[in-house]
Figure 1: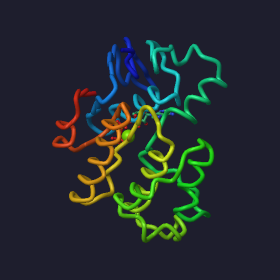
Figure 2: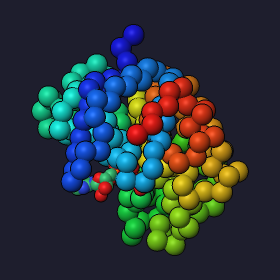
Figure 3: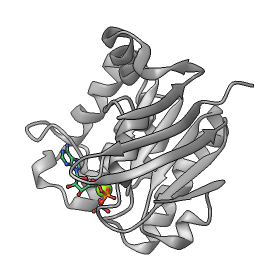
Figure 4: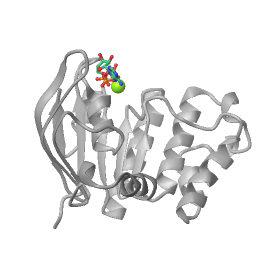
Amino acid sequence: MIPLLEVQNLSHSFEYNLFSDINLTLNPKESISIVGISGSGKSTLLHICATLLKPDSGEVKLFGKDLYKQKNRDILKLRREDVGIIFQSHYLFKGFDAYENIELATLLNGTEIDDELIEKLGISNVLKQKVGELSGGQQQRVSIARVLSKKPKIIFADEPTGNLDAKTASEVMNILFEYIEENDAALLLVTHDSDLANKTTIKCNL
Ligand SMILES: Nc1ncnc2c1ncn2[C@@H]1O[C@H](COP(=O)(O)OP(=O)(O)OP(=O)(O)O)[C@@H](O)[C@H]1O
Ligand SMILES: [Mg+2]
């Protein structure tokens, strides 16, 4: 079995050294949580693994292939088709309503909108509202619906439940865990919630 994600001897700095010599392996149905204080580099590590940022040194293998040795065009294709990224601040299209935001992902990927998923995320009643009129937690759930509607092979989630109450957060996390189980996918999760971090297969402390 080829791991979905393999990180070897990864190091990165901006003004100061963020992390060095990180090694991770993520197989189908597995999840990993990245924990650490604010500014420790969690989002940066997620961006590197999720095709968005080339690291200073080390290797990122996605689906068995060295990610940053591939052509830009191929990296873009991977990002569009196989990788699902739930950002710390959700990048939804503000002028569109919630439904159109989700629909866009399915149109780009040739998948179908999953009504059951939308029901489970509790956003059926806000689909016709403009994103700018939604609460932070509703926007977070719309962006999760959009990402899962793409049917990604691997999900990168940067504090996906940061804006949610405990009950909704736990429901949303169950949806993500169920998704990876049912689709042989994997999840890399950044979180400040230690109970949640303990539910993942592997824990990485920055
Ligand atoms: N593109 C960039 N250019 C320069 N510095 C950056 C860049 N992105 C992040 N940094 C710096 O790197 C450090 C780590 O940022 P990062 O966003 O990875 O932290 P984090 O662990 O996700 O923090 P938080 O828990 O607050 O989200 C910060 O000091 C940040 O200012
Ligand atoms: Mg962050």
